[in-house]
Length: 191
Image 1: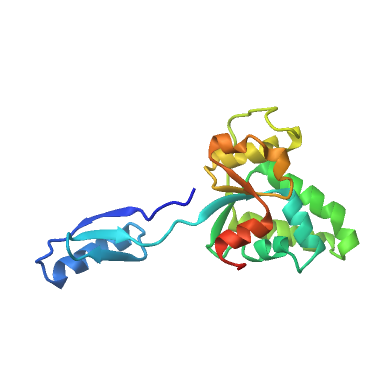
Image 2 (image 1 turned 30 degrees about the horizontal axis):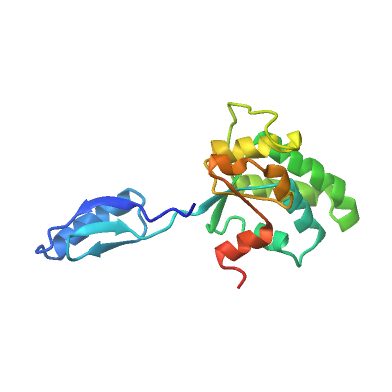
């Protein structure tokens, strides 16, 4: 589901000079609208910035990124904090990230401090969510239910995972379950 630009609250008198346009500009910027255009014919100011996608990144994508710097998973992790998308996390997911990263760290030459730094960075750039409901078991693999619950609570657009078959039924919540490569294609990172 790609979100259309939001309509900002502002009307201009098409016959008015730049003074009203300036007042609308100040009003829109006060409400967090960074970029907007004005339809000269009808005097409506539109927000022209698309909201970033909301995503949950499954643990297997993080592990894949730690194992190889040349794959799609690594590129997805490189884009964290770039404002191209917003990653959503919960306490259970962060604990799973940390546990999996610690298990794979020795085989990829990462220290415990490296793992802590990676997890800290993910937590710093992510939107942290609390889950107040449980729909378990819903998925084929009950260990993935917390990922689905987070995505639903955060109203995500995508779950990025390499276990797409394990998330059958996520579409009933308006979620798309895609691989790291498919997500990069959507972002325009791959042609």
